[in-house]
Length: 244
Image (cartoon, rainbow, N blue to C red; front, side):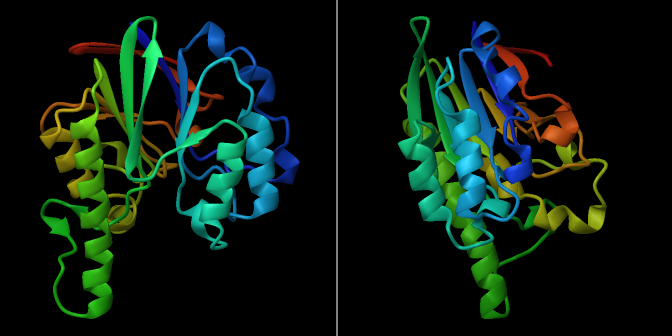
C-alpha cells in the first residue's frame, strides 16, 4: 500500500506562516509522500514563495508539487520553482519523478494544466490567434502529461495537475467558468496513459471525488474542499481508498 497525502490551493502569504506546519510535522505518520497541487501562493511573489518554502521544507516525507495560476501571476514562476527546489521540494512541469516507497515504485507526472472546457462545451483551436494559442497551450501540456505518464517506470503512476481533468470534481462551481477550471484533454491524457490515480486543485467550490471517462479515480484536493492540512489516499493496484 502506498499512502499519498495531497493538498492544493493553500494560497500562502506572510500572515499564513506556520499555519500548516504543526500538522505537516506529523505527515510521516500518515503518508509516504506529500503532493502539492498548485496555487501555493496568493499572488506569485517571492516573499510568498519563501513562506511556502519554510512551510513545506524538511518534512519527514518527499514533497512533490506543481505550480498553479496564482503562482504565475507575478511572472516569477521560474524563480519560485528554483526557490522551492533549493528547499528540497521537487517541482514538476512536464516531467516526472519516481520514488521508492517501501520497496514499491511510485511515479508522479506533473503539469500545471490549463483551461479549455469539457466535451460538448469546449473551446476549439479556430479563429483568432489568441483563441488558437489558448487551446494550443492546453493541447501542449496535455501531451506532456501523457508522455511523462507513459514513460514512468513505476508500480503506481499518479497524475498531478492544478487544473481539473474532469467536470465531475467541478460540481458546485458556476458552469459558466468550467472552461477556465480545466480541460477534457488532461483527462484524455490520464486515460490514454492508463494512470492509476489523479489529483488536482483549483476548484474551491467543487467536489472532492470523480472519475475519468476511462474509470481513473480523480480527487480535487483544493484546501477549501478537503478542509484539512492534507488528505490521505491509500493506493494499491485497482484500488483507492481515502481518509482525511
